[in-house]
Image 1 (spheres, helix red, strand yellow):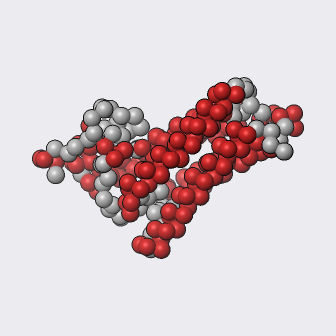
Image 2 (cartoon, helix red, strand yellow; image 1 turned 180 degrees about the vertical axis):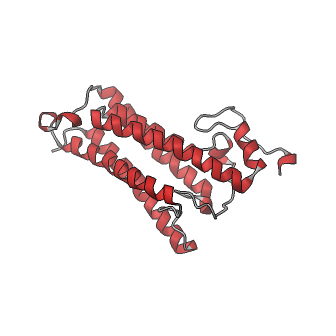
Image 3 (cartoon, helix red, strand yellow; image 1 turned 90 degrees about the vertical axis):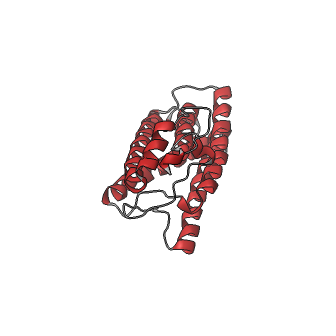
Length: 213
């Protein structure tokens, strides 16, 4: 019996999100022999995945557990601290929009899409579409989805996991920027100066200056 339809729909959407990411990595491996750095070659990246993957699994499983379990039967750490039906459905809509927006970003990145850092690999710098406004649209969207989940299911464990995931995304974004500066030099530095990281710095789309090409 479903006890929370918003939790169930959110769980399905987030599962579909990560299933699509897995499929993209598998497809890229068949085409290029590289699985989009699903497991990064760098040691730090592999260690971080040992933390990130259980958090993502918990993100999904917690929603499914709460969707099918009456609140009176839940452990205290799984029980939401607040309830609001309008807010819950708004969060589901935000998560669904996040999945759709991420599909746009993945398509825009094409063969340059990666899920981790390979210090020896140089991919094309994508600065069009959503990337003309912010440097990390996928991380920004994922952060919004995490925040929506925390508002939808504000249990002590979900709040703790959400904070950890948000911190991870911020850290990973900074690590990627250092890697991209090494490979793309001044063109990426100029791009960083004129675009926001997770939020737009301007309503005007980024366009490289001629002297930076």
